Each structure stands twice: as C-alpha cells, then as structure tokens.
Length: 293
Image 1 (cartoon, one colour):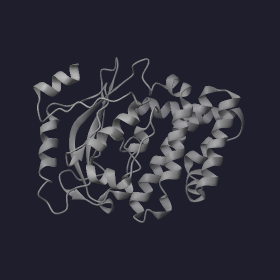
Image 2 (spheres, rainbow, N blue to C red; image 1 turned 90 degrees about the horizontal axis):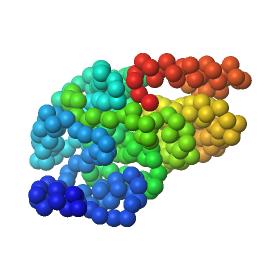
Image 3 (tube, rainbow, N blue to C red; image 1 turned 90 degrees about the vertical axis):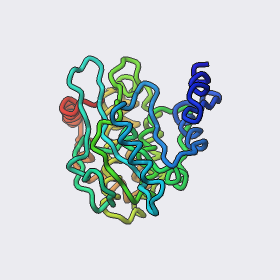
C-alpha cells in the first residue's frame, strides 16, 4: 500500500512492481528487466543514498545521454554506517582512480585491501548488465558478490566521483552479513562463491589490469568463505572448505593456480590447529583495522 502511495504521489519517478517474494536476487532481476533508465543502481532496503551527493551523481549520469561513448560504470564512495560506531569508515578510491574523467582499466592504480568495488560503490549502464546476461539466484543471500563481478568483462569505460554516495547500514544483530548469520547461511555464500568461479572465465579476460582486479576480488570472496568455515570450528565445515578449493581446482585450474599460490591461499592451507589460529588472527586484525564484517 505504501509503495502504491509513493507511485501515485511521484508519477514518472516511482514505479511499484509487485511480485511473489523471490528474495533479493529475484527482486534485482525483475528490476533490471523492467528498468527504462540508461543506468541502474541497486539500493538495499536498510541502506540509503546521501541527499547531497545524489544531485552530483544524477548530473554526471544525465550528461552521458548525448555522448557517443557513454560510461559503462560509475564508481562512488560508500560509508560503513556501523551501529554504535561514532567514526564511520568511508571507502574511497582516490588513489586508484582520477575523479571526474572517463577512464579505462589501464588508467587505474593499485587497489588497497578495503577497496574492492562492491555493489554499494557501483552504478552500471543498464545495457551492460543486460548484455552480460546477469541473472541472480532467487531466495539466496550474498548475491551482491556476484552482481559486483559478473558484468565486469563488459565494462570498458569507467568514471569515478569522489562523493560519499551510499550509506551501508551494518551491525544489526539479524543482518545477513553478521558473522554468526553468515556461518549459519554458509551454504548460500558457497553457492555464490562457486558461481564466481564457473560463470566467468578469467583466462578470457584479456585486459591484464581488469583480470588482476577480478582475480583479487574472487580471492577476497573465497577467503571470506574459507575463514568463516574455519571459524565455525566444526569438522563438517572444515570439509566444506576443502571441498570448495577442490571444486575450484577441478572447475577452473587457471583460477585455482592463481588463488592457491597467492598469500591468502598459503595462509588458508597452513596445517593443523596452529595454521587455523594464524588464519583467524589475520582475519581478526584485518576486520578491526578496516571496520567491515
């Protein structure tokens, strides 16, 4: 009823689409299919966009309408608006991207540890998402990992705005990204992790910087999955961690070689209880420094 009210009072700006509950992925799929705008941005139900930054973002996107080569992806800063934390961590990309001009992948610098481009930081050109064939699994959490990865082979032109556009509300007890909740739903996270491996062939991503970024992103997601499985402390989840790495090795030997012989691949495979303690200590320190879950 409230959605219909917004539609009535904001004609042309708000459109309410009603469907049977298909989870976050099903909602995003329907939104992309129904989108009529040149660009698409996903905002989660418990998050919000900054009212000051939105004018700058919209002006930048509107300027693309009459260009022969519009940008494929707009990157903006996002804020970890963490419950009970006075200092809010703002993730920016100043050292990676020059703000305000159109960039290619070869123009980008080196990404820091906390600078992966999650869904909150990006706005896609709608046609890019459609050309990529993106389809998120329904009734599954953590599909934003996939949304922030699968279309990238189709992205060529990028622009960065140094504004804190997206506020990522985090720290609520029942939130899907809370550590204990993620452990309970680990099978859904593993499903998305496996999709990253099977749905994009990194060996065919010819731009070296783009491939390096995507490989590092996949390494982060796989590390999080592995750490949570180790942190649970159960033999069943330890086996699931081994099965995940076996799956990667069998499905995509190219990716497995890159991941397994990287720093995190070595740490995650340190033997015995001592190895597990080292891996968890590194995770704990990283989480404390950067303030994310």
